[in-house]
Image (tube, rainbow, N blue to C red):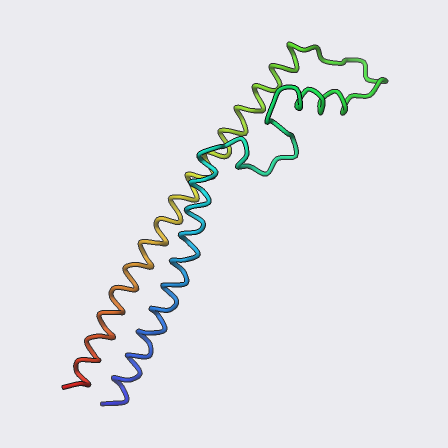
Amino acid sequence: MEKKRNIIQVYAIIVNVVAVITFIIAITSFISAVIDRSDPLYGGYSQVDLSSFEKYKMDVLKSTTKEDAYIPGDDDIRDMYDAAKADMINKVMHQSFRTMVVSGVVIAIAIILFGSHWWIARKYDKVNAA
């Protein structure tokens, strides 16, 4: 009977360690998503620089060659920039929200597992002390 109690305590401690590690990983992911959400233009991993219209315009003009039949004007480039900027903001906001929800669920599960297995370890510790 004593050996069974020790095995249950070891199991509970292992689950607690795994829950703490999972909590730490999930909380870092959650914090990263919150930071990305606060400034969505810098949160994504895009090859196009959307920090300013001038930089975007230079990228567009560099990508066009002299042989191209159509070189967009400033109004067209501004429309392209606004569309790309809105798309980037929407993508980062969606990705950060999804990460926050998933990380929140993982954090909640880790807390529940930790609490329940901490209670189990303490229960069998009190039984052994008596």
